[in-house]
Image (cartoon, rainbow, N blue to C red; front, side, top):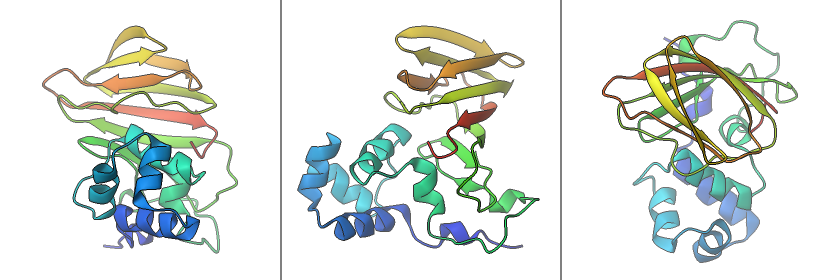
Length: 188
């Protein structure tokens, strides 16, 4: 089985490299991201996986998006047409799996995710990025909060949101929730 070349550097180590390249201390990154110094330290040491919203806060300090962070290490000589399951790029954490379908083309205009939410998990805090997102719940149910408004979606229902508004997904149920979604820009 072919392993994905995108997983060569542990995320914490990659964040430490970005910080060092920017010439910043852990304390300065913590201050700029609105996090504690100990949080930055344990994340960089790969002792904990940050929530998606926490990772977004850290990456904002480095002017990087989630998808750029997980795809920028591997140059693609030719854009793939078929992407195998083991080549999907995991950009989620803490029981929330976001598998990014990516063919190596960093100039694409549309992103596509296969999302899995374990029971009792959340994206953590509010996610916010310019663009749009459209998704369909394939299995289970999910609470979606957009700009303070609460929505409950179940299998078969879809959503369309302005991702410039703060939003959070939470699975309060005892079963897994699966969603497929497309978003713009591709690098959120």
